[in-house]
Length: 241
Image (cartoon, rainbow, N blue to C red; front, side, top):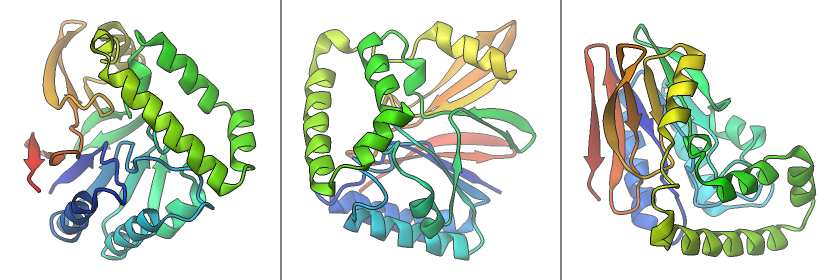
């Protein structure tokens, strides 16, 4: 009995080896799991289900085969693929979850998040995020021609890369400890699993006198990363390319 958690794959046609690693992971290990949870940024960019994307089509087929094998998969949107919607999810056989999502994981209430909303110190990012998640902005964006949307995504990605390379932004791009504590207290949980920061680690923390844990999933740039949770324990592991 194992549930699998992954995030921040940033799948893109320019990185075919990572797509192949994902396909192999789904066909082998995930095929025998209790469930697969994808906690955001499955794709490097997603400009709408109607835009047509070869990588998106291949990934949907891969996940659909997993669902047909009897393994359910769940998806929380990230900051790169927040426009992924019901049409693609239905094709892939994936269940869309809100952010945050509370699940029962082998008897332990567990909170799942992408993780970007916990980075409250990065006020510039939070302002941009609020704009992108506004229904009016999304409607306006999705009404634009696909090529215009694609150009916007390329420009936004370049700006994001420049921002994250700035060494002065390192601290504010990590989660805020107060935000983590407040969120876990609000949902009454002692376990939180998230991605986004690309800083894989299992953190132990004190939460109202109780030992709690925050598990951060790794990205899939230089290798894969998976959290394996079993009824008797867990491990955060690397998947070599």
